[in-house]
Length: 320
Image (cartoon, rainbow, N blue to C red; front, side):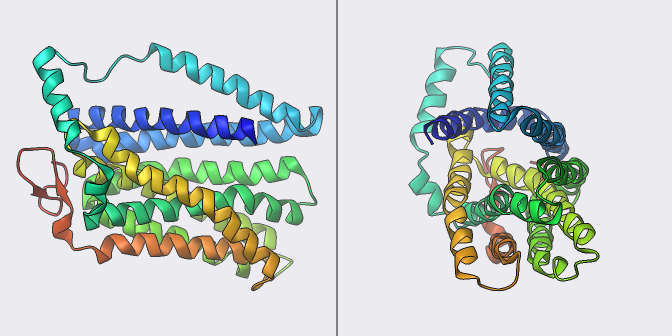
């Protein structure tokens, strides 16, 4: 538990920096914001595609501790790469640094939370993270049951999900730049949640359960990966200039809270024997659908951009 806490603590801090760097880079080419973010999402999917089966093989060959050693080596490699990254927007002089600090002082999570658009972003992020919690806690168990308790087979199911995510991320980026991040995030989130809601139905027919289950998981991964660049883009366009990391950390924190609470909720559903097998995935999918629809429930006028001195409605100038 202490090791898992340290892993999550460090990952949360590093991701806050990542989101700030992505915001800086995206502002250099706002017309390609969605596609740029989708590349980052796709590269992450490649890592999952490779890591899941490698972890399964390591467990089968060397025992459960081998998986954690693989994580350790990957984390050390990540640390070395991070150490070589330059600052994306270094302050040119003391005056710029002072102005940047003044801007950061006026940004607080309480102020952001009063904005309905930020609350909708938090709900959407929380819904997406709830499904990732189901992927970590429920999908491996269901995969083991379907594939005769094989860790490698369970890893291959996660790899199939990662491959579909690799396909979905670029599509989400293109849609974000073409039709706007709000519509893309809502549409993809709805379809992703619907895919998980269908999981219990895929497990009813024993003859085709394996194929239907893997298909539903792949659909979820593709659509949730497509939603990722849209949510990040929407947050970047609303973030206060000079305080992007602080602003973007709010929906991330909401997602982390959902990731923390959702396993207990899904475990309660399992223990209560509510519904057919796979009902836990349906519950997580429902949370994602609610989060996606909250983006549409919030009036479009609340989604404005901070890319200039004036608030620019996203529907009129989605690329800033």
